[in-house]
Image 1 (tube, one colour):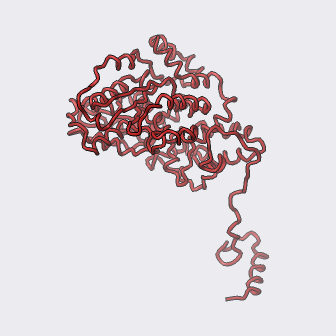
Image 2 (image 1 turned 120 degrees about the vertical axis):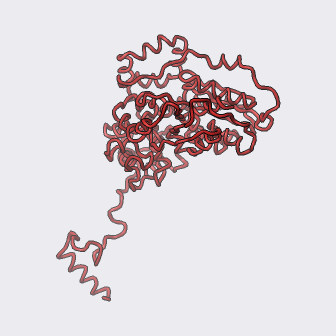
Length: 472
């Protein structure tokens, strides 16, 4: 033990002979103050008018500052979904941490709007799939998908005009395509069309189906005898664009199942995709579309259920809607629920738990086993095991969950970044698909996932509602 005066001499002596603290740094004497070598204190010099309401995270910068640099996003493949672009490239700038560092610098520049348009940041965000894995797997719950949408909102004037217009009016394009599906599908197969839209020419775009779901439903006999509808009341169904125009079998199966269960079914045929608008940073337009949908659900009673088919579309109502329509979320009882909109399988699970689900038939031959791939947003914002639990209600059906991360498609990402998309798919999804036998069926909960499986795996996959339509 030395007194303070003698200890001070020892410190001065060591500093004289070891000014760079190379010998036993921080072990004997000369320890750095605890406040030294921390992150540089950067402050906002100019505030931005944001598209999202960030007050629940204090501010936009505070949402970025949640990243503490732990680097959990630098996982190798097979150890979680986060971060698929890092797993494919092994480059830190394409991790959640790398993007957060770039965003922090940009938001604290004298001209943050210009800084957000910087090429390095734009490249880093361009390879963000928006899978939301960071929201659930990052220790600090950094939501890079939401941050990317905000940046795109701030910089939308500098985005490619034709590509932005195609996303802004995606619903209108599909509506036109539904009138002349053969012509529409032929045009979108052309290389020049793909190049104009920024789509890799090696990709195939989803085709429009010549089937009118609304007309079909109007002509369906509705089950009117006594049923569980007396307990479950009405079910409102958000029929998304993809299920209506590109995969009508999904919409048909969902509505058919609910009809067989005896519900009073109220379909809402959506004209726009909130998810597409949000992902592209078209937040002003997204607010309008979401507000219109809320207006169509004005008559939803407290005991009613609202469900959807496409996870990325319906989970908007558990996540981004609270930052886009905060007033509406407190105004409507159904919208203030923890789960305003249910997945199809969540509704089935509720019925099973209440012991009011009818007996299910065995799945028709030749199918004996299901291979299940769950959408990334479902993994991040819901309980992915629910899908397996519900599938296991089908008598005699074996369920194998594909231990995969992101499929690599993620909306329009896979169409623009073919090679990275393929590399992500090859990490776990495609090897698993090679084990699928002819008497197996693949269930993929997302439309993007199903298209990726078809494109790279050469196999057809189905929505869970299609299987339940067979067994109800």
